[in-house]
Amino acid sequence: MMWMIAATAVLAIIVLSYSVFPSFALRYVQTWKRKRAGSGRVLYLTFDDGPGGSDTEALLDLLKKYEIKASFFTVAESAGKYPSLIARMKEEGHLIGLHSVHHNNALFRGNRFTYTDLAQSMFALQKLGCDAVYYRPPWGHLNLFTLGWLKRLNLRLIFWDVMAQDWSEKETADTICLKIMRRVFPGAVICLHDGRGAAGAPARTVDALRQALPMLLQEGYTFKRVDDNE
Ligand SMILES: [Zn+2]
Image (cartoon, rainbow, N blue to C red; front, top):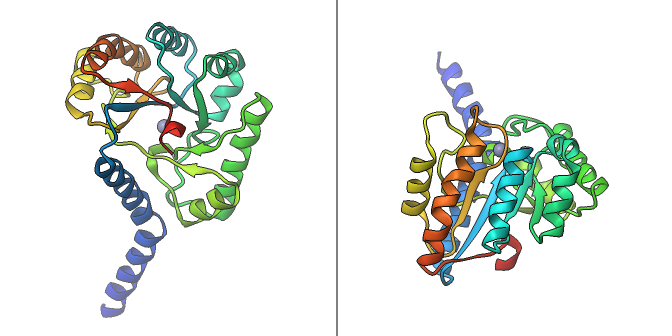
């Protein structure tokens, strides 16, 4: 009985230190650093899980209207489906980063999966004319191999500070807008989604931003790409 408890405890420690601990600790460290830096009234709009076809198009129109530059963490297989949207993001001055090939979770995966996922997504974006430098892991989950490969591939890890659960069917454009307004702070990285999620979710995200952006601008916030803070 004792050995079973000991074995379970050892296994739990291995799993925690292999993937769970780095996934959560690193995110909190990044947020803590940004809060501490207290850098002016700047916000970083980031969009994961796209491109999402016409929703991404509507989002790009909206960003253009307010002359806002954002950062898109694209899923490589979706990027391959919408090369013209990737070209438009690039042309309009947005940052394009990596968010895996198929949006698989890296939490309990091994070395080979971790490397292949990163390398294939880099290659897919290179074929579309983008040399991605930033990587945001799906669900914010990574493992120790991820950290090693990011270093070797010269990729930078970026998490987020503010989420609005905009992928959920429970949220409306109004509640997403409200969450953004309530949760932002100077220097915050906001994570929203222009693809995947519940039916109609990315369209609600765009509608939420139609409300939130003028209010945030009114509050004196400016918007930058994530590579503008280093
Ligand atoms: Zn994602």
